[in-house]
Length: 154
Image (cartoon, rainbow, N blue to C red):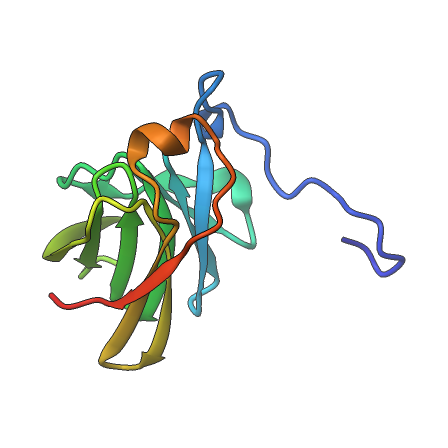
């Protein structure tokens, strides 16, 4: 966005496109080293996008299947919590390579209530929000009137 408030396109890249009828980009966090980590739900991938040169985006190498990745929460420079609503799990990912690669170092299994996003209270307390849907209901896009929140425990 420029100083007059006119929006501009930050990045267009075919790697970020999603098949028709599926979620593509979903979660996003800012890293203090000057890049974004962006979740691509349909692929179960995380992309690292440098703010100074977005076209130089890279896919983070992760051995863990993250299909259905949604909300993300950066705890510190090397630790990221991610919600995978289709799997009903929260993963703790860590990196030793500035997010060129990451490893799952913890898993919290949620009830099958479609977890969507995360919030942090302190360094040791993370909470997950559920929309109280199962994965099939969520694909049908019904209105949601009940939500719940739980503390994440690895």
